[in-house]
Image 1 (cartoon, rainbow, N blue to C red):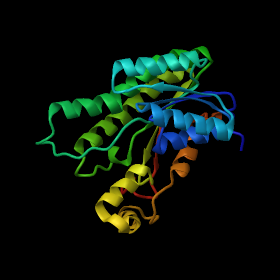
Image 2 (cartoon, rainbow, N blue to C red; image 1 turned 180 degrees about the vertical axis):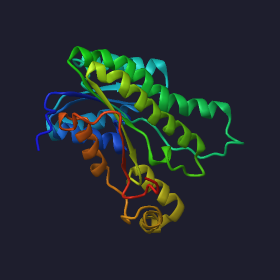
Image 3 (tube, one colour; image 1 turned 90 degrees about the vertical axis):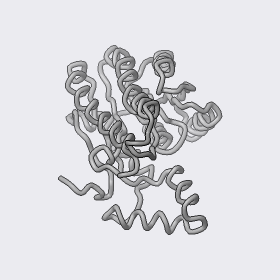
Length: 259
């Protein structure tokens, strides 16, 4: 299936590793050019070189902390220099571990800036570029925890839920600009972070630990691959999904317990 993405420019935050890198590779496989944003310059440049070598597309980079206004400005400028964004995937984020009673204000503020304000600032800044090119697509990577929270990460749960609501509000405002906005809520996706956590907790038995997690939480009894999630994300951002607006899609192997 031709997704109609050849020559489009996709801006992806957290694009140097894990889910962000997987999404970047999936876009590149469809012929899209990229603007990758991340904090670490070495991993960012390695990712860019690898994608260019494998797919021959254009890849620009922005070393930026999108939890800051200045970092978002740098990404917006990089997209403008690359000819303007057609697609924006707000992916930068990380899990948390705290209790409400013990977590300080600055931790709440950091996650708010990273998960929510980055999406607000970048959507606001990239929208004029998309509008000038006739429209585009925005995809927010939230989490199943936005609707089915885990007890040990209340800050993550709350900010991801806010991100999901932001996507719904933004979709109504931006569809008049021919910019479609949707949200994806991944469940258990086998990322380097999950593997590292499993090694820390279970040592040589880390793969068995991951299977136990999958058995407990996902009816499909396995983790999803980054590639499986990435393919779905790319489809949602493509003209093939032209009538999908303001929706939240769970990619979770049946993990969500509600309708």
